[in-house]
Image (cartoon, rainbow, N blue to C red; front, side, top):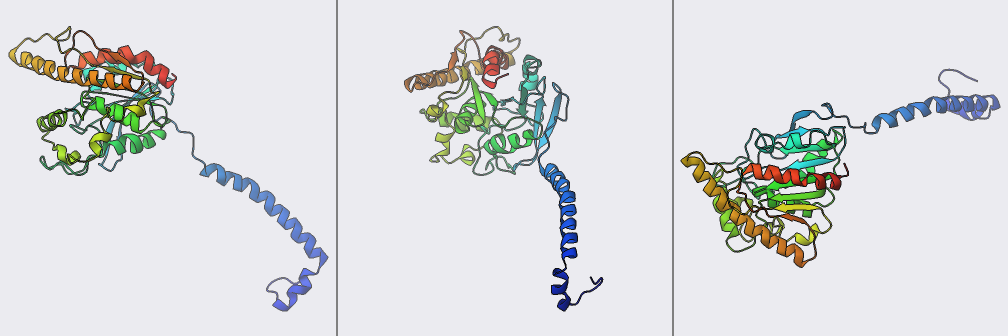
Length: 338
């Protein structure tokens, strides 16, 4: 057996040597024994690690989540015992850029502080209806195009999955502007949402005069153009209307409510400004009551059950929505299995 460089003419002689065959087989066996645990280690390192929350279970955190709109702030209260279920709480028409109003206008976080469900409160989205728009608003110099449906149903759940939050065991609740968004998003994404709620929402956007009312409201809150959301003839208006997608909600646990518009326990105006605000809240709630009653009839006509609540008093005010969240809490927890 020659060592060093071997001429090609000597290969046939070497390969016929039985001692070489035995040594080669031994080397192959040793190499295989060494390679097997190494391969297993590589495979194990390539597998995704079990997600671990970066905040203690039950703790509070503010995340900046990447999106096509740019980074979006999301307030999160993690599940008490580290569970994977989540409840998305959407803001109203006047959504601010610093905090989701559920976090400071209500006691939502206290309500679920001892429950094994994560509260997810996206920040921003004034007048957006949490939809994917066709262009930036043409009236107020908006720089980016709203893509809220994409964010809530793709980017955000994918991001939260890295924290151990399920992408398929979520609830979603909205009020006023986001009441219709919560139901339509749940209808279009049944694989993600296992519960939906609407408090004082506009649930029949196709009824006469409703789109005009939306146009006026969007101008009032942020000078947004409804044509930038979608042109009047666009099928997007039907897609985001709970009334037209109602059949897709069959089998989904839901709580839907609207007050009478009459002042109640949370209406105690002390000055002319508060009297004016109360009057506006009465008028808006009366409109949402009509819309919600219409939606109730729609669901009954197609055999889709839901829990409806129409209190004798209540204006378009956060404390009434806080009460509705508390009343719906047992149903929410049951739907999410926590």
